[in-house]
Amino acid sequence: MADLFTHTFVLNALLVSAVLGLLLSYLGVHVVGRGIVFVDLALGQISMLGVAFANFIEGDATIISIIFTMIGAFLLSFIKVKDKRLKHEAIIGIIYAVASAGTVLLISKTPHGESDISEVLFGSVFTVTSEQIISLAVVFGIIGLLHAIFRKKFFLLTEQFENRQIEHMRIFDLWNFLFYLSIGLSIVFAVRLAGVIPVFSYLIVPPVAAILFSQRKQVVVWISMLISLLGGFLGIYFSVHFDFPAGSSVVAALGGLFVVVVLIRFSRFVSLRLTTNNHAQENGNGTE
Image (cartoon, rainbow, N blue to C red):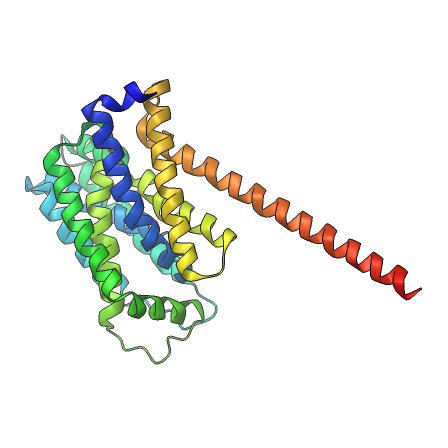
């Protein structure tokens, strides 16, 4: 097993997975709390729309996809659904569908668009360069520092969305925009390396699993990060050892950890019910 991690490409993959997992699993706590779990797919699709547009005009795919994603994050920050008959996901779904349609239309007019879109969809953590790792670490480090310094602001805003207490919120809220901007920038850099589905899994699976363990926000954050690190390590290990695709292996590993958490939660629930029933029977016999 130790021999597997002597290769540079494996170490790079582990490093990228750790950096991705730590920030995305933290941001995912906010995403799940706000009930906007498909925002990752929407922003990822907007990023792909930027890549398709870049191919259409023969421009720089990275810069244009960043611009498109920042615009998408700006627009998403305005979404404040006050009608109880509607959910955030409905509006996000519309944006995702329109961005998908635009991507397909542009791809149909560009000769090499499909190869770049495939790279955005699936990524490849085994082919990352040192420059890409440094860029990812710098961008994610800045975003992580921003959320660490102003964590109370971001968590307070998330709690307001959880409790649907957004009536007093202004049309444009700086902290809400910074949240969507941090999500958007994270996704732009993450999907080019790891792919949309692994990034979505990092963003959603660890926080949901952590929520099953605890109701305390800080505990949820730490458990979420731990699950993401473990899932990334196991995914890369199984990918190298059994020659599986890296992205799919990471998603499968995170899914496996989620199943383990569900089983632990279920066993605790059954144990608690049995204990409660036993106490009730003992009290009943005592009163007789």
